[in-house]
Amino acid sequence: MHWRKPTRAIEFIVTPGPAGGTDQFARVVQSVVQKYKLMPVPVVVTNKSGGAGTEGLISAKAAKGDPHKLVFSTNLAYLMPMITKVGYSIDDVTPVATLAPDEFILWSNADGPYKSAKDLIAAAKAKNGSFKMGGAQSKDTDHILTRQIEKATGVNVTYVPFKSGGEVAVQLAGGHVEANTNNPSENISHWRAGKVRPLCVFAKNRLPMKDKVAGDMSWNDIPTCKEQGIAIEEFRMPRTVWAMGDITPEQSAYFGKVMAQVREKPEFKDWLQKGLQSDMFVTGTELARYIANDKANHKVQFSQDGWLLKD
Image (cartoon, rainbow, N blue to C red; front, top):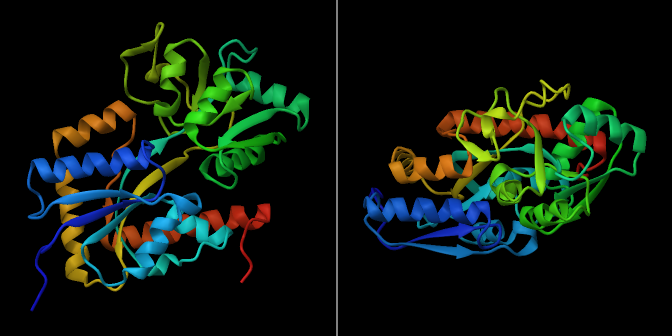
């Protein structure tokens, strides 16, 4: 008998902690699925954030073949096994879709001397290693981007890891670090409060939103980092959805269709705009190619940095 749709409640397993971006992502999808009855069963959200977000994927490994669970993560789901022993392989889960990639911005303290990214890079070069760049955890997305900034500009900084993007935002607002690379939603309240200053966005084009956010500045007023002389054309973190390993192609395709329906609903589009996430829906064979390409690109960087896990 072919499986056509879920027959019992679906569990959304969230890998990072409660109230973070991925948790918000999962709960928005949950609310849209339930409001529009996109699946015929209830949806429950479970946070399994232990082991720097690996606990949820380890639990997925144990649930092989179960078509009633989905894991919500980021591209770190497949990058982490490349750099640390995590207790799972990305082959233990089935990719369903990428949605809502986060943009990244280079921020400084508003009371600091840096009025532009060019100012900041020049100061970091002069400080020759003593410049403090805050980020969320070691070898996490912020650390990966910081290493790219160093390579693109020839600077050498001290990377200071914290527990979360929210904590990094507080540290920058308080002047305890000189810069961070938080996504817009993590720093926006501190920007509005006049505590931090956006210097450039790691995107191919300026962000499109022209409504004033802080003072007389909009997101669109922030130059791209490439405009500011940092040779990084784009850096984004896609939010990812995974099914269990060894499910059928029919089951995987079902969840891909559900996610395609979710992204068309106004509530999801509103969430994208409020969080300044981009719309990036990739599924099926295109997703497999995207993951392979992203892993290959990061493998080069991880190898250069000595992060790559030895077999």
